[in-house]
Image (cartoon, one colour):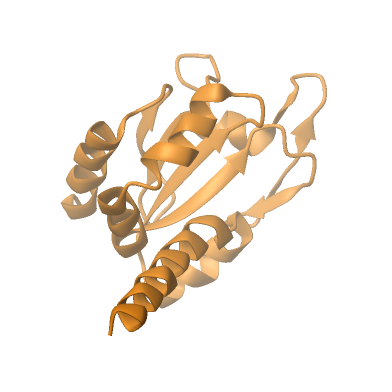
Amino acid sequence: MKTFLVLLLVCCASVVKAQQTNIRFNQLDSLQRIKPKKVFVFIHTNWCSYCKAMDEVVFKDKMVAKLLSEAYYFVRLDAEEKLPITYQHQKFEYKANKGFHELAIALGNHNGKLAFPTSCILNNQNEILFQHPAMMNAKELLQVLGYFAVKN
């Protein structure tokens, strides 16, 4: 019985983690047609220590992971991604002169600046409802996610 419970917990954890890591912008249009949800976008870079802390600690919090998987499509966006991304029938590309991807700039620009990490929440019509250009701990993120999960 213990072995079964451990196996079940491992499977559930991997399903939550898979949902958090596998959603891509080019999948959102079709996912929204099937099941409309809000979108949580985590804009990060590979060199950002605060981004890594959110990834390794905050997103692994059980309550955060549960709320993200149930109420949101979770998309990670590397602001320095070199490949083009098609989203909402528009092609976004890396801008070498700026050092960042156009989509990261479009979603993460806060008062004329792009900071890392930036958390964004979009409604199912892809309008920005929330932007936060700094790290949040699990408690803070849970409050934000809970608020927007129930808000139309």
